[in-house]
Length: 207
Image (cartoon, rainbow, N blue to C red):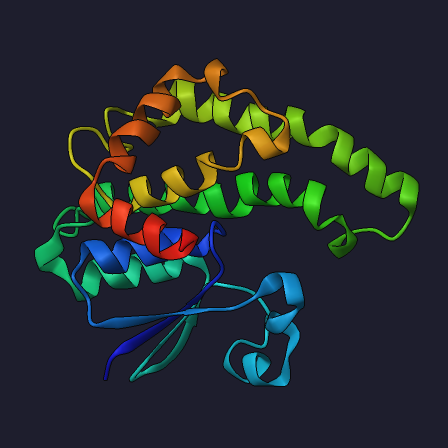
């Protein structure tokens, strides 16, 4: 059975999209139009009741959440060498990094664009939006100073972490954060952007 990835261009689902492409997986990429609310349609909610992307459909069912999908792809296609699967500590470090992007950086980013998940008061929403450049900037500062081993996230070898960092780093300017503040993250983004699989995914998503 071919895998089906439900995604929206430029969203966090791009990381899973890149991982599948890097793995040469047999998959179909299906665009969900978040701008038109397709994620809340009965048809999509039947696939992913969370009403978000990504969602990966395979023979075992539906898998959601970017870190889980990335780990699944790495483990399902070990020949692609997308994670240090033979080293439990190194694999846990990869999982730790991806969990940080998901649970901390993405939440900080979402406070500006999807604050209604947490508040209704216009003053509270405005305050969350105002805070985004500071909180997102702090996340990238930590990545720049402490978490990016370089040139790739885990050091010398490309992994699922790099697809994820590349994806969220593209959000910086929209969050009011100057990418020039983080030269190591910028160099990482340029390195990953040049990979053939990444070029194909970006072209497909922006077509």
